[in-house]
Length: 500
Image 1 (tube, rainbow, N blue to C red):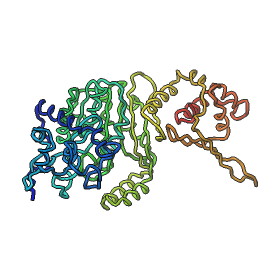
Image 2 (image 1 turned 135 degrees about the vertical axis):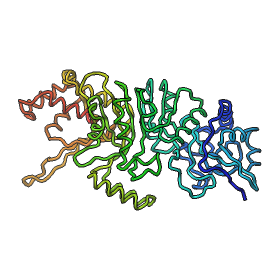
Image 3 (image 1 turned 120 degrees about the horizontal axis):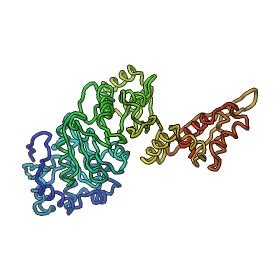
Image 4 (image 1 turned 90 degrees about the vertical axis):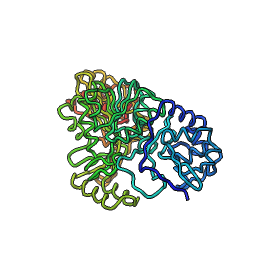
């Protein structure tokens, strides 16, 4: 029987430039890149990978060097030493062992096994901790375990980040370093990543060197401490947000209420985000009785809150009871943890749980700050969020009133008007008017009958002023109504996607 003798939770070695270059050449020559791996396994993307132990039925035979690398670094299974020697290029195993990526298992038969997970994705090779011990024993992940970036919620977070040029980017809680590395390789002049876990910083540095990226720096420390005295024009964070009485997994547990790490990230923005700079984050948070999530963000910014624009995008919104029911149905969360959540949310008087994204922009000039919140709709992209921020900024500026009054709105093609008729004095009468739009924001707006009629006349040819005057002429508005109030209503309808 093979015997595996190794230290628990091994780390890759930060080798020489030539050793990393040798590993890159090996992976390239063997086709260990996302197109090669997905093509061999018959899957759409690396995120759809399923290991042999989880039921994969493709590429079960070791026929090529690529098969051997898939078996080692994705399946996490042993590969017979003789098979590895026959399939892999000369010196391949030695180059992997030099970086502590594989370790020898004494037999019979003698074998090799990976010490960590390496997967191709995002145009990189990314290393992180294995999901199981090397011998596949049922052991718990270490507290400072580094999670793979290929998982769905990380990919969703990365998709929310704009790829526009920036001077200096900071990735708070960098983990494997994926956000900082993507920025450094594509749009940031220099990217920094900070993490409280020394293990995460080690993996991030390994990934940087493995991919030959020079303009990234990874530092160990709590929140902003490693970059004290520096400022950035872009700060990004995908903080842990699971409420936990104590931290068992750094990448997952977000403090007693799940918002503590996000709160500290936002509290630091007045010191570390430059004027005109932007902060992007994904999080799960709560709307509490008497205090919406966006109101709490404003409080975290303290005396500087008027220096920041804020947009909150809800991806989903659920009542605590619904969330707990879904969690219990899955059956993979201990009863004590679900009870903790239930007690916590009752104590905080949580009405809704929100999962989504946050965009904060520091003002570069003196003007009123804006706050907006929308629900993600079909086809929503980063461009829609950036547009919303710019639109709200413009229409809230008193100097733009004349421009807004001369704006020519039209109904969004996907907008719908739903009219409910109720019995009134023995006959059906229209009593509820709902404007609904599914894209790019999922918007529902109950309006009065006069507003529904006025909006239905928005055809892209008539100005806001014309619609206002028409509403007064038809008696839908009082003659003493103010033009600027009507214009503000139209501006809100544009923000929600009902008008364009």
